[in-house]
Image (cartoon, rainbow, N blue to C red; front, side):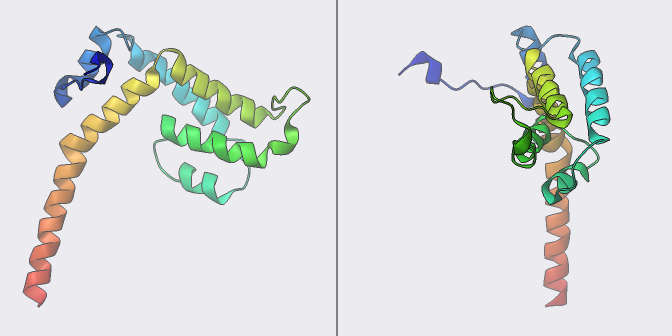
Length: 143
């Protein structure tokens, strides 16, 4: 078996520490993410009217994956602003591409994704399980 295909088991509580200890993410990633948040807040101010973008921006927290989707949508809406060399002349597109570069520069997206994963496993999934059991009990009582 090829060594690169061997899975790694990491305790979910130690995932962020593992990313830092393996130097995939900087120790000070929380400080770097603040700058990304500011860029996102500034870029949100000038957005085209598009249903897909409106649904993405309706959430309270925009993460790396939302930014990827926004750039894909902007590739369609800002297609007429391409220059001879294939670069976008639109300031919107430049802003969002800069946000993605900042995320990817120091692997901030890995730290943010790990944080979301930990939050979902520790809080969201147990909450959904409780809600499912309540709904099942209500279904049994009503039948």
